[in-house]
Length: 312
Image 1 (cartoon, rainbow, N blue to C red):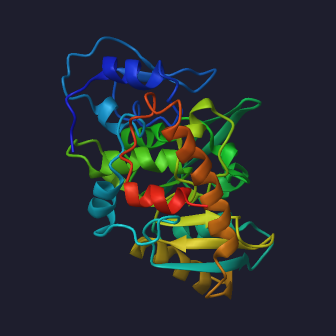
Image 2 (image 1 turned 120 degrees about the horizontal axis):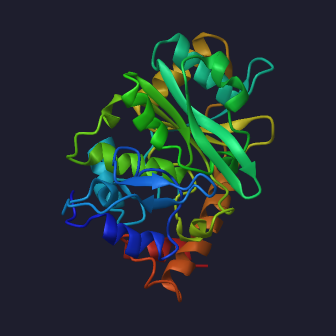
């Protein structure tokens, strides 16, 4: 899954076209890319002689072969169009005064599923902008756990590259769907980057908005995570957890065993969560199919999926 295009193509097709989502995938491992420290937007540092650019092939907005990525990362493609590939969906609550997300992180550290974690370090709330910070304990992560998806807006995937350069192993990340799309492309590619040291991907189900490129996204449930935290579909302070992989299940089991998370409903009603997800997806699919279709060629649109999403 490599395309013969380079940083100049990325600049023309994504950055100048207004598709950049500021995720940091292109510059996580490529020395020819960086991000603007005021906006988080990617830019080309210097001319690159590579004909098959790591930056272009890592960007979730250059091209996004969803079914191919699912097959490589999960060994199957989705059955549920709204939620993606998953093993289980449950409703949970925190068993203490800490947040559900923090308790998942603490369980992952205690069970040695992760040894380090990439989290957001907020630089600006208006516009939303966070840079990655690499921490080595749940305690150090505590103040940096996101409370909403836009807390994560910014080039967080670069934190995976930073952790690799610091010789970290078993790297975890709490990220939005766009970040995890880019990371999925890196992990599924033939490039040797060090991203394979990522051992846990916690996704924050996104409500979209905040950045210009958000209107082109169709993933609101962090489909390429190991475990997704979704505030949609459950009354606060409870939440839905979408378990997608064995690693995600291992984190949940550890959190339950350590009495950090309680399952309040093992078979919750998913209608409200799916209603929210499909409403967002439908709106953005219409954007992709409308006047902006020429700009938004990156997504490999499935006609059966479109029929399912767009029908009234």
